[in-house]
View (cartoon, rainbow, N blue to C red):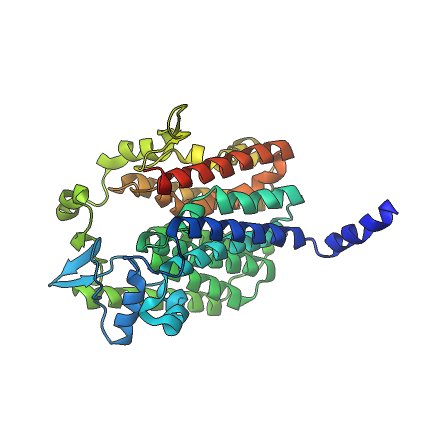
Length: 424
């Protein structure tokens, strides 16, 4: 009797192996919605910095300057206000604007964007698994999905709306769509997949300019073609080149309409926190003089455990990503297993590793760390690259290690987010 009751379940899971993962995703969605409602009181009310909706409204009326009631952190130029954030996310927000107009809630669409990122991260895992023929257990799949959902900047950024979180969340949505179609092309060699991939990469850059170096992944196409004994067709190169040229011209046109300068995004005219006024006015946005300050707040500054008051003492300037996003530590396994990889994996690790290195160096040279925050939100620019590497190394970690790392990541992010929003 016992075996007959278990067999149908086992048979069902064998026929539909992703069922358990989507049940986990449903649980993730419930937790995201619960935290968001707890933090905001109601997810249906927009925040004061719902700037993208004002940008959509500006586009609808034939101009690029916005007229919001609240102007903090906008760019002021010739007595008009502009966004210095890229315009890419408006594509996702158009349905919300059409349905609710200026009352569209950035809390809702940022929350949905964050949940979309979790789903897309898993869809990318499936494509990577197929391309590299990686054996992934159910435990490993759950680890990857849950670690991204709760122990990455995606969790903190998805919960409360606001322009800073909205821009990052939807930039990563475009980025994962880039990854997804990139691997779909590697698995199928269908040209429209790589054209779609490049389009989403360009949209990611038009949402967050610091994602530019993720484009180094496209160089892997040449290695892939060489290993497969195929040549990249001239038609494909022209299609990709034309797509990139279109979006570059689109971005330059947008900048010109705002500031009469195709290279000016607006940060030099930013009217934000007073602590950055001197830096913004000087134009020293990137410099080696910020390097060690950023290294400390990105990698070294620990979260302190306190027996009195709050359980955790966090630093809104930033805390070590190695403590807050512990799955990153598993990427160190690459140093021990790299020699065991086949040529395809080695070349991919080198390509992704180079993109990650340049992206992180760029963050170290930037004048700000992402303050105010829990964890380190700017590190979301690089985290997806490490996530790709994590898929390669997770088969070499025991289930015990996976559960310990996952439990730590969930715990510290749940408590840290709670303290950030309610502990001050």
